[in-house]
Structures are given as structure tokens and as C-alpha cells.
Length: 542
Image (cartoon, rainbow, N blue to C red):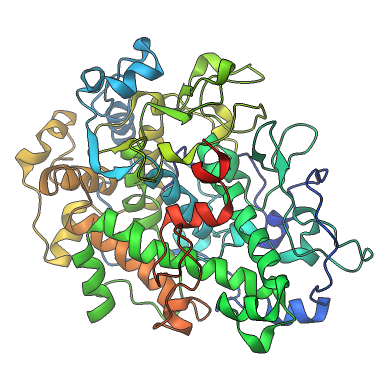
């Protein structure tokens, strides 16, 4: 769910080469030298073992034809559908400012709130998208075989977007051990933005992290920093004593390998949140339970891969959930006032401290107060937008830095999404619904597409179909049967096909870390994750 479609511009590298392009940063947060560090041979033997040598994209429904044949008329129609002020533009009253857009729903009549989602769901979804998929080689609107397009992330939820290739290969991500150049550290570098944590940055402000897309907006940058701090706290706790090591669910047989156990514990708790909090919000608990109990019906490969129906369409539902503006925190701006801003504002392009939520900048106010994004029980949380065919107006003019590769035109995110259907030659939503034996949207449900003269109301681009299906069948509160089935089966399937995930290695496992009340409840949610990381409102005194 790429909130801006994704990241800085990079050459097409192999995965490890990509992970080494992040540069170096100065360590500002000093930590005492650690007595325990994995040897090079030990780390190499425990490195993630991909089940396929070279990961590519693929198809979930290879026998289905494209929704339409490529043509200039089709391209023009897709551009018109995704045009600013066009069919999909929510028409938010941006001139009224970011605060009014939050407190006055009348300014976004075509862009209603989702009472079941908090604002952070969007960005957690974006984070897990960056953890499983990264496409840099396909071209907008130019047909390409998915099997020829490399995925620069491992297809799973192993946090390679955070850990990179590990402390030896990507030591610029980690604090020095203090024990010589051949003894890598096992804690992440984390810097400070003036008041609270910030990602480590090079002199030009670029984040020194394993996946630079996690600095494309302020919220996902804060989330990535929380993951760094979560790991570091786990390392400290596991080093405290053997009793603490065992109590936190680490495996006694691996007691010397603190890094490996900290990574496993963080990864499994993160995977638990995906299965038990995120997916039920997006597709409904009933569908999650059905797939876990009865198995997957359509995503059934022998080895994991990312289907283009998922990557290019269904999982992009999150773009509809983005708000036009956000409150980043409650006391970060001048005079300890809340920092409000548009998600993106073109007028801020040349600012050193932009008034919007774009990433890549450091200032004392540029941190996230998580009570806006997740429910800590203090009534400060804000909602997402509903999943429907109306997209918040700022997403029709993305900052150039948020667009990958050399193709910076068009800057409208909906246009880019729709052109991606030609790139991957994706099947229509109707054809997939028929294969699934799911209810099919009627032509009148998609009547607004009939004006384009290409029968798009009968053979609809999958992304648009998934959004319309959610809008009509689920009132925009969650995905409908086609979108929900694709998203749930792929995410659960990737976990089940990864022999290192908790669903594969230990399906009966339950969270072992304390919840935010300090007790081990055998459950774990995002508010618990942020509390353990030490970025929650109570710890910060906000």
C-alpha cells in the first residue's frame, strides 16, 4: 500500500546491492559496548535463506486476459479518470487549511471518515508493503512480463526493510560495537531531531536506512524509527540477564546470539500484529478466520512471490484511506502548539522545514505523536478515510522526490495506478469476481466509466473495481470479496510459505512481550509495540 507510490530514485540493483546504497551517518546516540556479538560465520549461517534464488513478480490469475488492449485511446481514458479535478478527486477544500480539514467534515463531503480505522492503519499498511515488494524496473503504461521484473525486497514479512543485509554487510545501519572493526554492533543507529528520535541521516539529509522509501513521509519515517528503537530495547533487555532472556520468549539454546533473538522476537510480534490487528480491520475477521482454518483458494504457489494483481491493484486500496491533512503531534510546533500539515503541499517544495508531511527533513517539530494515529485511550486519535473511489486531493500532485525511477510524469497517483494496469496487463475486476464465484458489480454500479467509450463499466481496471466494490458492498469500511480475498490470501500465504515466520515455524506461538499495561497478555497490538519502543505518549510525557 504505497502511500506515494514510493521512494527515492535508484538504479535497478540486485537486492543486496540495493541495500548497500544507503550511505553512512554519524552516531549521535551512544550506547555502552556490548559483550556479546555474533561472529561473521555465525551470522552468515543464520542469514535469511530465500526459498528461490531470484525473486520475481508473477500472476495470480495467469489464464485471464487483460481488462483492455493497450491503445492511445485507453491511455487517454485512464489519464482522464485519474486526472486532478476529475472523477476520482475528492475535491477537498485545501484552501481552508489542514486544521479545518480535520475538524470540519463538511470540507470533505466526498471523502468521508472511516469510524473503524485510526489514521495509523494507512501507514502501517504502507510499512508492510515496503517490507515485501519494491519494483523499480517496470515502466508506466508499457506492457511487461511480470516474471521478467525483479522484486527488490524479499517476498515476505521478515523486516529486511529494517535490518538490511545484517550488521556485517550493512554495518552503516548499526552502532559500532566498540570492540574493533571486525566486531559489528548489534544495535541500530538512531539519531535525534531536536526533541525526539529521528532516523540517522547523511549530511545531505538522506535517511541512512535499509529502505529509503520509509522516509517518504513523516509518519512512516517515525514508524521506521520506532522499529529501530524496539529492536534496541530488546537487545538491552536480553543482555540484562539469562532470566530476562528466557522470560521474553528468547530461545535458551541461542542465548549468546542476542541479535538473532531480538530480530526474531520483533519480527514475530510484528507478524502477529499483521494477522491479528491489521488484516481483520482491512478484510474482516471472518475472512481471516476462514483462510487460516480452511486454507487459501487462489494463492497457492510452492514458493512465495508477489502477484501483480496484488502489487499493482488490490493492495493499493490504501491510497483511498489517506487523509488530505494530519496532525503530526500535539506539541511540536512553535510555542508548543500542535503541528498540522497537508500530507503533501506543492508550495513547500523548496522549504528546509516544510509545513507538510513530506519526509527527508529534520527539525524539532518533525516527530510523530502517536496518539493521533493509534488509540491510546485518550480521545486524541483521528480516523482514516473510507475505502472508495474518492482519493484525497493532495495525492493528485505528488512531490517529485516521492516518485521512483526516471518517470516523474504524471504526478497524479491515481493516474500512475491506472497506467500500471497496462504495464502488468491486469485482468478486470469482473473476470476475477467470476473466477472467485463472488458477487459481480453491475454495469450501473460503474456507470460513471461508460462515458469513456471503452466498455470500462463492463471490464474495469482492477484497482478501481476493488475500491468501488468496497464502497458499494462494505460501505467503505473494509474491502469487498474480490479485494479482500486477494489481499488476505497473499499476506497469509506469504507468512505460511516463509519457514522462519511464526505461522510456519510455530503456529501455536503467542506474543511473549509485555503489553502497554506491563503485563504479558499473550496478545500484542500497535499501541503495545509503540509503548515497548518508548515512543508512546505516556513515556514522552505528552
